[in-house]
Length: 168
Image 1: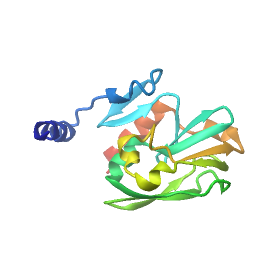
Image 2 (image 1 turned 90 degrees about the vertical axis):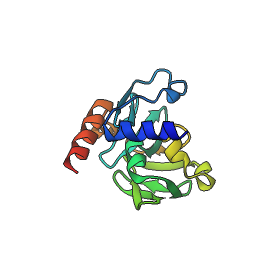
Image 3 (image 1 turned 135 degrees about the vertical axis):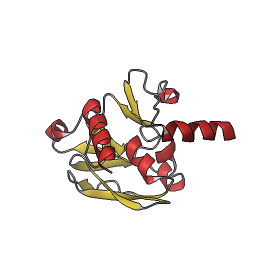
Image 4 (image 1 turned 45 degrees about the vertical axis):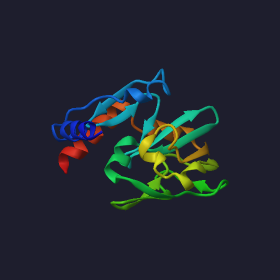
């Protein structure tokens, strides 16, 4: 255990990256890009405020990215809207509280909340453990699906994160 933690810390300090193979079975068709331990999945769209969207049929699932949860640290509380709430593109729909900070979560697209991830109430750390699978936050019925066109794909988001991190 200690050796694994040391290796992880050393790799992080040296900026060595490795893709998370533990998620491959959950998204078998996914293409992942990894930089400094942040995973970015193909098939998702990304906002500059570090939320992701997966649009399938009439529903879009939204959560925060691996990059965002990594920067936040251990998530200890999640505030989510109720089913039926309207969300607007770039408008706050909730908050994530970590040991480091509290951050608003913005919706990458507009729509009506049709489902909320109730598991996060008792296990907010699911966002850290599984930001793209078990740690999703809300599902919405998009009111303007064309808003997805303004979001970044995986390569653009990876480049955005690299540039943002280099600037800090």
